[in-house]
Each structure stands twice: as C-alpha cells, then as structure tokens.
Amino acid sequence: MNMTQEEILQNLKSADINSSVTFLYSNYFEQVVRSIASTGGNRQDGADIFQEAVIVLIDKVKTGAFKQQSGVGTFLLAIAKNLWLHEMRTRGRRVKREKMFMQDVPTGQEPESRVANPAGRYSITQLLQSTGEVCMKILTGFYYQDKSMRELLEEFNYENEQVLRNRKSKCMKKIKDLLSADKNLLENLKNLSMYE
Amino acid sequence: MSNSLQTDYILDELLKGRLTLDEATAQLRQEGVEDTAMEINLHKAAAVAIQRYNIIQQVSRVHGEFTASGKPTGRIVSMQPFKILLRAAAAILVIAGLWFVYQYATVTDNSMYAEIYQPYELNTDRSQPTDPPPNGLVELFRKKDYAGVTKLYPGIEKPGNREKFLAGFSNLQTGNYGQAEALFREILEQSTQGGTGLYSDEAEFYLGLVLLKLGKNEEAVGYFKKIKENPFHTFHARVNRWTLTRLQWLD
Image 1 (spheres, one colour):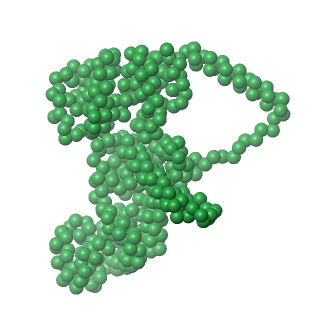
Image 2 (tube, each protein chain N blue to C red):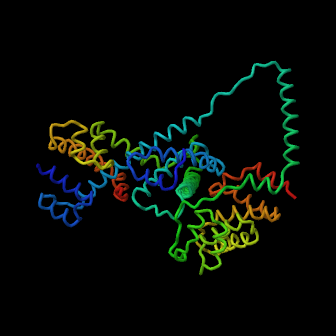
Image 3 (cartoon, rainbow over the protein chains, first blue to last red):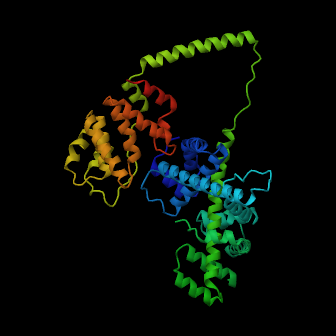
C-alpha cells in the first residue's frame, strides 16, 4: 500500500485512521523495533515505544501541532527516538535509585522494565469501557466522529432526541464521576487539547 | 430541558466552538453552576478521554496485528539422516564460497552506487521563515527538470538548506559531481555550526553517493558508517552491514 504525505495527514485527521496507521506500521515498525533492540532494548520495548510514538504523532496531527517541518516518517522516527531516550533515562535513574536504597536488601527482582506510558492508555481504556457499549458508541459518535444528535438519533433508534440527550448526559456523568475519582488521569487529560 | 441537560448542552456548545468561554461561563452561572471552571475542565477532560480512547483502540488493533505476525514461528526440525545433512552443508559452503568470490570480484563504485541510491521526491513543504521567497526552484525540481534547477540556483539570493539540497541533488543527477559535493558539504557545515539541521540527513546520504562517484571511497564509507550507526537516521535502512563490508572492498 502506498500513501502520499497528504493522504496520510488527511486520513489521520479523519475518524477512521486505520489505513494510515497500517501504512505507518508497515513502513516504520520494524525499523524502530530494530533500532531500539540495537540500543539496549528488546523487541517488546521497541513495539511499545512505536505504539506510543504513533499515538503521539496522531495527537500532533489532530490537534494541529504537526506543522510539516519534516515528513511524517521522519517526524515519527524522531518521536520514537525521544521516547526511547526518555525511557532509558528513566530506567537509568530507577536502577540508580534502587541500587542506592536497596544495596543490602536482596529482593530477587529485576528493576521493572515496562515502558511507563501504557499506564495512561490503560486507564483511559478502563474508564471508557466501564461505561458500557452503548455509552461508548453514543459518546464516540458525538465527541470523536463529530456526528450531530440528529444523526445519532437515526443510528440508535431512540424515541426522540430528548431521550438520546438524556442517555448521553448520563453517560458523560458516569465518565466525569470516574474521572473525579482519578486525580492523576484528570490532571493528564486537562493538559491535552481537543482535536480540531 | 432539565438543568443537567442544559448544562451539558452549554458545555458541548463551548467544546464545539459555538460559544466563547465568556458566553458559556455566563450561561452556566444562569443555570446555577457555581464552580464553572471546574465544570468546564471536567467536561473537556471527559471529551478528550473519549477522543483518545478511540485513537488508542484503532492503533491497538493494528499494533496487535503487527506484533502477532512478528512472533517467531516454531523451529523446523530436520529428520534427514546425518550423512545427507553433511552433504547439504558442504554444498551450501561451496555455493556460499563461490557467491562470496563472485561478490568480491564484481563489486565496483558504480554497482555500490546503484545499490545504495534512492530517488528523492519532494513531497513535503519544509520551508522555513528564513528561506528565500518562492523562486521556481521547487517547481522545477518536482518536474524533475534537474538541468533547470542547476541553471536557476546560482541566481538565488541567500539560498537556504532546501535550495542547496535541491541544487546539490540536481547536480548529482546531471553529473556535476564536484558541484553537488560542495553544496552537500555546505549544508553539513552549517548544521555543525548550530544551524537548523534541516536536510542534514539527506546531505549526508547523497554526499556519500557523490563521493563514490568521485572515487573518494574512503570518505564515502565514513558517511555510510555514520548512517548505519544511527538507527534514527532517515536513510538508516538503506545501509546494512553487508553494504558496508563491500564498500570497504573498494580501492
């Protein structure tokens, strides 16, 4: 599959990003995984970093922060490189800390080697999935696919718009209640921009 | 509309840009919302979470396909008798030896150039505020009018890295290797003096190729080694260990 820079950006700005994400994985996944494997990581680290880099890239494109100073591929590689350098620094500090404080305490455990960021991804996934399938579909339609209430009404077959609005409002309340209980996640989300 | 429905409606109108922050705040107050900032932040955070969730889901699906297909498959255990295996191994050794000798005998500057070379297409606008105003160079380059680019370039006042690179690449295409070498070196020199670094990956790669054309093989190997050692170099995938080994065979 071949895609031009313009096609990739166009697709990443839309709701269904499957074709561009597949293109990015086909063209850059192995390169990043190998690079990370050759600089002190393993394949799992490489795969995690690549996934994170793709999400960051999509975020930059969707929020308008990607200014096309370089090609999408070059930009993706640069993000992956930065994430990996950051991860290595974090690991370095972690190991140093552990050595400093636990010199005489044999724990029998290796320092944790998971990439840090998946925690955030996991929290968001948990949060949304706990609202139930119907809620996820309504909220996705309204906030991600940018559909109008009228379009959603046709899609979900509710009696009238008022009933649908009620349902949507209840779904949002559920998310807000969960977010209020997870201050870390709430703080992280507050710092992110809405998509254009 | 109930109170909470109306509040949600106002918050959505704000998120979709149909109300300003001031308008939304005033309307929320009318609805009896006391901490409007908190309400707005929470609503926005929830919407951001929904958007990110959809991205995460779609990326995870593709990720799963790629990581699952990359899993190593089981080993093939041969049940052939030892004698046959030994003969096969000997045959492979002979073939590999012959192949190696053939490779050594046939490697030349031009064959290595042709193998490493990658066409360059300008499909990205990387113009900088400091770039000279539009001058037709990019258009000529896109049309692959390399002779036109080399003719136009000397007339450009204060050319930026983009112009230098396009002119360098065009000189490479039209056989003016010395000129191409000088332009690529200018980009790299500027980059080491704290410049933007734009086009430095491209300049390194194509300078390596120009040097092959000029017979400066030892210096060319230096650039390709650098590219090979930097996994994040744009042209990293073009240079592997075998390429480097054969480059070092060149006189």
